[in-house]
Length: 280
Ligand code: NDP
Image (cartoon, rainbow, N blue to C red; front, top):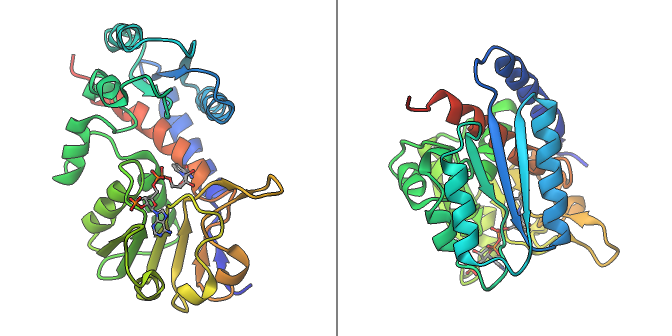
């Protein structure tokens, strides 16, 4: 392996230590409510990780586990109660929701001031115009990894593979805001390997295990792997084929221990931001 490892766990620990110190000085304890509907095993793990992370930095958190048959009306009623709950500064609805629920409607009912995932259309719009209330968690985590590694994307060719509302699109916006020259690829992109090979910074978020291989990467590129997939053996693997890409790239994030811990760290940062920007 020639690439340097970008250690998301270590960088995340540094940021969380700063956050913990800041929270100690705050009058109001930041509070996060996590809402989960149904019995999705992966979601349960994510929710528990978020609760643990909150308690480690001295934040208040509450988990609302609702049964799978919960209706839109019941879920929205809970969200409205959380919107007016003084103890709660951030609300997160764990996605995906069961298919019978209207995800868009549910998110639209979260107060934009407490929407720490930055999924509400108002917050998405603010990201677009470069005046974010909250930073989108995973893309903000990626930007933070780049910053802590001393990589300035200004003027660099940045290629984002994936155009989801959660990762790909906001990722492209943040790279653009930092003056990267940004290309977004998706499943209909022609000559994907060729486009990827142009990248000085390649961010991959497609949900396909070990899809990006060494021959698709420019020598010396920085490669950020957002993907989280289970291999046939049950191992957690990224969207990037670590073994071949790490022979070509200058820097690479591992999976696990790369982007994953940063996403939760961004969520904690956003909850603190929500307290600080609270209108009284
Ligand atoms: P989505 O399924 O919502 O989006 C996947 C995107 O990848 C789509 O835009 C799709 O294109 C594109 N895509 C799929 N196949 C290809 C292909 N063969 N070539 C090029 N583009 C392709 O996924 P998410 O964005 O939500 O998540 C992506 C990955 O990141 C997943 O593995 C997920 O688990 C992980 N993830 C990790 C997080 C973390 O904290 N580390 C947080 C969030 C997600 P099209 O639009 O054309 O269909």
